[in-house]
Image (cartoon, rainbow, N blue to C red; front, side):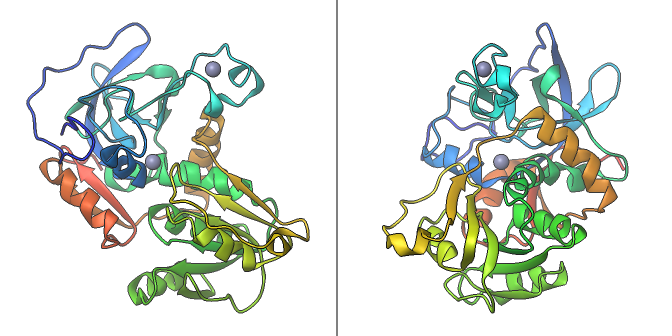
Amino acid sequence: MLLDEPGRPLRLAELPVPEAGDGELLIRVHACGVCRTDLHVLDGEVVAGKLPVVPGHQVVGTVEGDGRRVGVPWLGWTCGECRFCRSGRENLCDRARFTGCDRDGGFAEYAVADERFCFSIPQGYPDLQAAPLLCAGLIGHRALRFTGDAERLGLYGFGASAHIVCQVARHQGRRVFAFTRAGDEGAQRFARGLGAEWAGDADAAPPEPLDAAIVFAPVGRLVPAALRALDKGGTVVCAGIHMSDIPSFPYADLWGERSIRSVANLTRRDGEEFLALAPAVPVRTTVTAYPLERAGDALEDLRSGRVVGAAVVRVADPVP
Ligand SMILES: [Zn+2]
Ligand SMILES: [Zn+2]
């Protein structure tokens, strides 16, 4: 499925099987998770480094030749030389290239990836259930780490990432408060079913102040809303790559050593840590599968909030 240019629908195309260069793997794709970042690429809010491009950056497949099952995440390549790469912050690399944005991704039968940026997929996760771990899980995990030891955790937007983070947070003994679109009782029930002790509308005040909040929804006005829900010393972590503008707010809302920060991309270390943690929790992903040619419908369902849990494109018969 190709994106020719931002604003256009994805197009089913017949492409030659890509060739793996030095240090790269040719992967037969089995499944690829659908992420809000794909929507930002489609809409041009995140600028693709190549066009046309095959989107999709939560790729699960097997390596042609040896059959190893691997996952390809958003971080597709880094320079290894800049000051960020040299200080354990490759997620901030000046020259980073991202899967499904600067390199062709996983909404296809085959993908090529730099072997150094591929992960092995933990046992016990079928392809469809593994796919959301690769971005919703990894970046959610990085965002959760930035909340420190916060006990009372708010999650704004209860989609693919939050449904994973909620399980990890509960496993760590944290208390979870879930915020959804106004009146989205389905999502609120879903959150309670995964261990959130309270679930309500995003504009509502939680029953008690929070120690941290993660904003997954790409909605800037939720940032001051989340800030107002915090106790002193609390942190708002913005987990998305793009967000509408954040409205101004009184300094008093930030006072008391509250902070706001973003999370950018992931490091390979995040991936290794999270993929070891997921089976120990164990994280169970709830997925809705779409055939490859309906990747565009999956994205529109994600946009309109119709997906419970994570949307995943199924490319071939899943290997159990
Ligand atoms: Zn993503
Ligand atoms: Zn670099």
